[in-house]
Amino acid sequence: MLRSALDLAETFEEVAPVAIAMVAARHRSIVDNESGPILFRAFPGGYDPTHSLTSAQRSLLRAFVNTDEATGSVRGNCLWFRATGLPEDPEGIAALL
Image 1 (cartoon, rainbow, N blue to C red):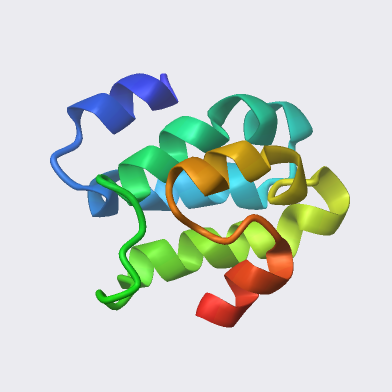
Image 2: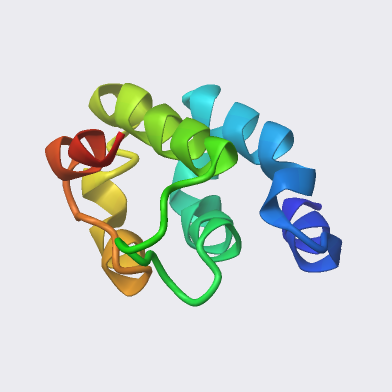
């Protein structure tokens, strides 16, 4: 259902509350299976360090960092983070915030 919502939404901000809540819920299966689609929707075209992060992007990244110890949400999904041009570790993500 989340993937359909991500596809149908015109902007990430439309689905950000649900996506962020799913990451923040600390369910490992959600983080493992949905991280890529969530990150690609939040950063269409990839992360661009010349543009400021939106509030929704900051909240999403904060949720990933806050759940990393419990779920490995960043470290366990480093390929997704790399694919979007984001740092591949919680410390690198936290530095963006």
